[in-house]
Length: 370
Ligand SMILES: *[C@@H]1O[C@H](CO)[C@@H](O)[C@H](O)[C@H]1NC(C)=O
Ligand SMILES: *[C@@H]1O[C@H](CO)[C@@H](O)[C@H](O)[C@H]1NC(C)=O
Ligand SMILES: *[C@@H]1O[C@H](CO)[C@@H](O)[C@H](O)[C@H]1NC(C)=O
Ligand SMILES: *[C@@H]1O[C@H](CO)[C@@H](O)[C@H](O)[C@H]1NC(C)=O
Image 1: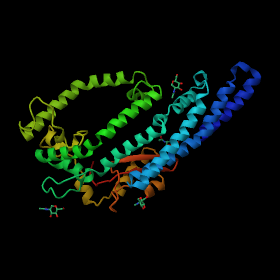
Image 2: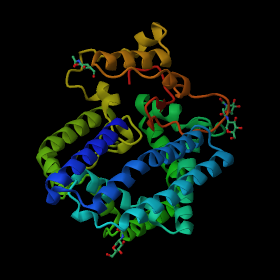
Image 3: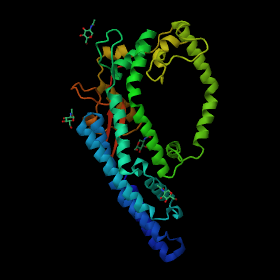
């Protein structure tokens, strides 16, 4: 990754030295050259700060405790301070008049500071709000529907499996309510703080709102209209699917649970967020007599473990000519839920540490087709 900018810079200098001799008007301004040099030089430091920041996040998310929280916040503050310096060094240039589009884009991005633009106390408040929401989410546990003195059911794996497999509407409703009340409600104030500070940071970065700031990442003025247009195009199809699934669920659960015209109760869709409906395909399949493909039992029978599942994934991507995972992936990833009593964020995530040979996955994998 480093080779390209270095080559470009060398080529740029040769070209400009020669160009300067032949035709002065073609030369890039002194100011632009200086900015280019600065951006290239700072690249490695930016990556190092990001790496330190992401490593501290990883340490915390894979082992939630006070020490790791402090280390994570320290790394975030150090990076924010550094990025502020970079932004203020770059703001002294009149970069919109530069000719190199790539350089202009880099500088535009580096002068917008994200939450790091906030004053130190508010930045710390933001960090605090985010961490508390994360901790609450990661540690949420609810009590058993049939045994209220057993209160150790976590989102992963227990609740995820119940949402997928239970066909008792009262049980599903119970877990849905318990989990949302415990995972969401206690963080209401922190969420409000997060929304407010996000908007404040956006305005300090000269956007009109937090939404405008997030949308800017797409670098497309018409992004919202394009998405609206796609949704409108899909709406008739979506309405048909919705109507069909509601009909199938009503047939299965009865009118008292699923009304003829109303919304579908979210807890009946097989997934805590009603994000994917595949887990209720046994109810909704139009070909009820056909066996649905489910290789879970066979995977268990053949003794698959999570490591083998990731090895298969790696082999598959290599067959598409993608790069083999580095050895460190296997050493540093968390592919199974650790049972040493530590709290961690189990929600599956893929991590890039901004280094050639450090990518990881953190997932409390279960041996299922999903
Ligand atoms: C979790 O973090 C604590 C404090 O930093 C550390 O002492 C402990 O070894 C860590 N546990 C694991 C399993 O990494
Ligand atoms: C209910 O859960 C508690 C705590 O796990 C356990 O000790 C008890 O045996 C359970 N009761 C029944 C009826 O399963
Ligand atoms: C926002 O605009 C003001 C006034 O034009 C300018 O001084 C400031 O540097 C800008 N801030 C950012 C982060 O671009
Ligand atoms: C596979 O990747 C290599 C290296 O990136 C490339 O040279 C080669 O052409 C690729 N092969 C196919 C079939 O795409």
